[in-house]
Length: 410
Image (cartoon, rainbow, N blue to C red; front, side, top):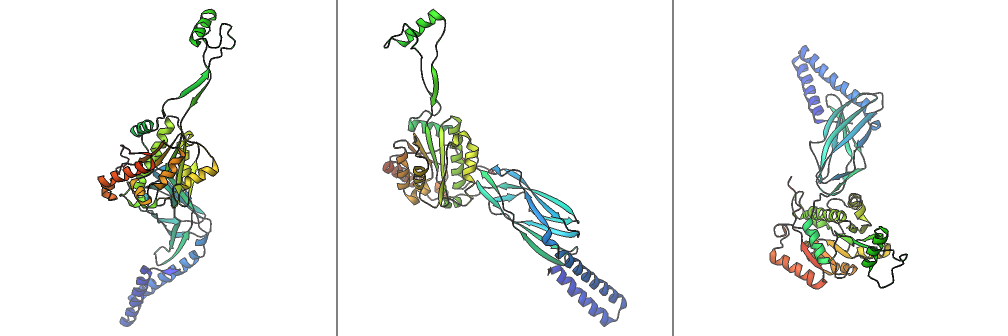
């Protein structure tokens, strides 16, 4: 139990009034001074009784959904439960949020908790970055009705939300990928054969079309191919996110924001045309790989992004992904798409990309987001061209900057 600045000022003024009333021998002032000091003493005993039960107050946080989109608003509820037989006259509820979550109003509430009662508070917050955003604990400040005394209780609540990146259609980027790799992601290559073995007029080497039409003329039955199947390209989508990218750019349009939006957009576009996509992303000290991400892109990206905190990124070399793949699956890919940026290529060199390109020789593509590299990273046109030239010349991969602008206006 501690005394507030209000309590100190009140006590000092009351003491001075008592001294003045005695010195002036004014009974009216003396009675007022005694009344004032009795109020202070009453508040003290009241809050002393309250202090014995504040540790029994239960607090929980309600989150309707753990998965939201970046910049989406989410309503959060806080429930306070007083199961004791003593009323708590005043509780100040304070939430201290981190950098990448923004409340619509300042989350500070004053609550009266009667005995054996519950109180539910709600407020809305907005996720300012993709990734796993941990919600901090609460601070409860208990005071008496006149705020002369207070006590603070810190509550640890382990809650989090996962904000997925925004995404959009990137048709031009998809066309570039098709042109470079030679893979027609939008079409299906059908297989299957006609069952001609039971046709008496058929001999090996005969024209199939002539036999089919002759059979149709005799029986009236049009034969169709059996065992239809489809052949789809198998693609590995690699997302290279580094910590420094969160500091390049401004607000909700840092290079990390834009690069994650590009990766999510690529996954959605490739999944729409039924390409078989595995996604690999390095977070902190180890890469994470989600196989068959094309079946449910939202679930796949949720699983990946839930291991990445805003402001974080990969701390190991990119080829670590290749080593993990060798131990876990041994899959072969028709194409490898690496989502990275010129800043990372300058800092880490092109050797990591060259090693990743060995997974799909001749069909590895480096996709770079459109960004103001000259303004925020100091890479002007000539320097950017030099980076691209070194990348293509030394690694043999194809590289391009997408035309779509994935920055948002808020």
